[in-house]
Length: 86
View (cartoon, rainbow, N blue to C red):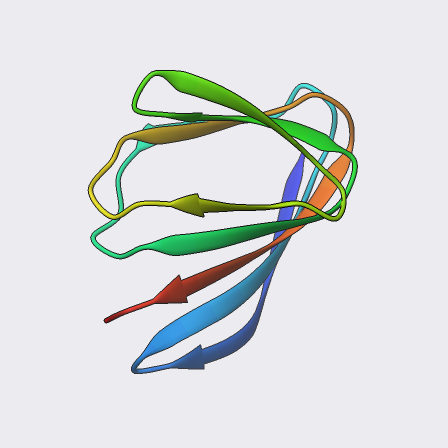
């Protein structure tokens, strides 16, 4: 499954930890704000506007505001999602 825990939430943004099992997915969606994904360990395929990026532990990727994106766990992985409402 997918487990999430909000670590910090303020009017200007939030920081949330996620853990995914292999094969778990988040279907395509958009957000009104830029988001920073920091993969802690494991691997995930992140599709942004039709282009897939393989992101591994220790790597970062930006999810641009209003761009469709989806996630698919290649292996078990953990990430920190930072949303900045700016």
